Length: 280
Image 1 (cartoon, helix red, strand yellow):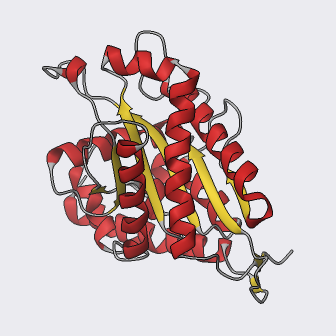
Image 2 (tube, rainbow, N blue to C red; image 1 turned 90 degrees about the horizontal axis):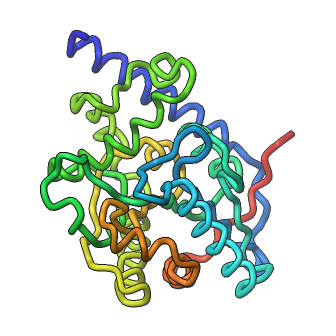
């Protein structure tokens, strides 16, 4: 595809997503009070026909769903009515990236967390020794490694029907496509970075993950949300030792607990916005 034509289509795509996202949160405000709940949107990566990365025994889609459910349960048990949790999926089903963001937008979420597991191509030398957690915010990739992670996560759109038309020519495998993230990279950036730093801290200090630092890259699911958003790569499935860690229920609970500690710290810094009710 001609580069100028591609950029033109991507600009139209950017405008279209902005309109859709704005419409999704066009709401009637209600005065905030002490009882206003913090709305947390939890996105369990992949699902259904989209397995995500796979190890020798595990599929990413199953681990992310279990961690997401555990995070929801811990949050609601400990915070009660002061939090409302919205799940983008609560079973093994395929949900497109645009719909995941729309679910959070419609709920008027205060924070969006997308949970994933990392891996690298089979041809990568030393892949079985890779380990560590990284929490991403939306932004321009500063390394080829960050771009590769974003490309792998964004490639899921190819499982959606008419994805080329839906995403107006965005090609997850084409680096030029990622110019769209220049258009909106500063929205909620400060709060997103705060949450990313908190999640990174607790995943390292509480869950004992190796520290691969907070990073930025162009993730479609983060770009389409209208609230502070992060994408968590819990660790590397391609490392057999890490896969064995993921197999344990106590490990998944430990990861969920770490994410909860980050959410709780974040909501104390950034209390919930006024309750918003979508007009019928």
